Amino acid sequence: MNFNEKITLLHLDVLKEIGNIGAAHAATALSDLLQKKIDMRVPDVKMVSFNEMMELAGGSENVVVGIFLRIEGDAEGSMFFVLPVEQANRFIRRLIRDESFDFNKPPCSELGLSAMQEMGNILSGSYLSALSDFTGLKIYPTVPGLSIDMFGAIISIGLIELSQVSDTVIVINTSIYEEVISDDEAVKGHFFLLPDPDSFESIFKALGVPTT
Amino acid sequence: MILTNTNDVVKVGIAQMDVVKVPRTIRTSGLGSCVGVVIYDESKKIAGMVHVMLPDSSLSRTETINVAKFADTGVNALVDMLKREGVQSFKLKAKIAGGAQMFQFTSDKDSMRIGPRNVEAVKAQLKKLNIPIVAEDTGGNSGRTIEFNPDTNKLNVRTVNQGVSDI
Image (tube, each protein chain N blue to C red):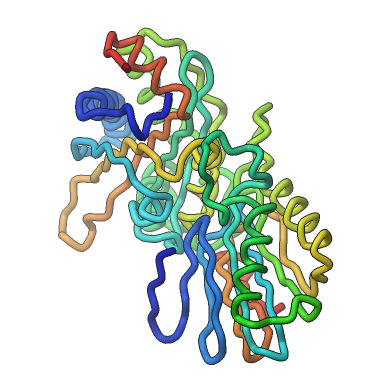
């Protein structure tokens, strides 16, 4: 299906609900993991150009900690969990109880890196299992990969499948916030769910939403 | 084509291309698996840049394509753009950067090794057009921001962990 032409407001609403349910579970998992209150911003579902996509996490050169995994099965796509470096540092320091850990100072300790990977695993797992329960689709996440680099360089791998059929991307974006003490600490993380073009039909079909 | 000019730096977005003359420089940021191709004419001090996402336009499943997105069509289109600015094609040289593999994991998806494929495709296309590659910084697993100055013919490559270099 050519999603540029056929996606309606109803479809975007359905995708928004998917993001909502998935991210609510992930936020709960993160909250449990860190023993901290985590807030979630209702997801944003947008059809954006590739270059607009680069602006969703502070620009293509912005350095972030990114977890990436592929979704395989009845619906396919790419999923990213992206955190500003300072936020990731806070989470990992808390998890491994090591205040000296810093993603800005490689080589980072194996423990910290694997804690980050595991956090990505838990969060994306809970996001996707909620999605799977909701849609009844069988979906399998790959083992997540971790990269600390420019946002543009990280996110572009998620645009490869889409770029073969379109110059725009439908992104299901959820922001999560740590309950903060002061405003300058109010940095946020993002989940980006980028379904492959052929998967929209499977998702809508599973939910009984007409696509023609 | 979207241009934003600040301080005489012309920015090229993902799947876009443009051409500059001195004193302007041309830049693209956050290259991962994508490849930034710079083609320039030293004598005329003109340079073009394309930010290629995919190796081959045959991968496209749409009727109309954005030529700058693919290595085969992007390199050709950039050369055409340069010719319209009056360069002589036998004088053209190229510098390329990017084509990294940002994440290490196993997947049978071909798209996961898109970086090396993009580099190969860019090289094949430049060879077809007899444009020599003077310098390259490709592969690895780091993102890159590149800026070319047609006055010095230097390509500045910036990475997060491996610092800055001029090639």
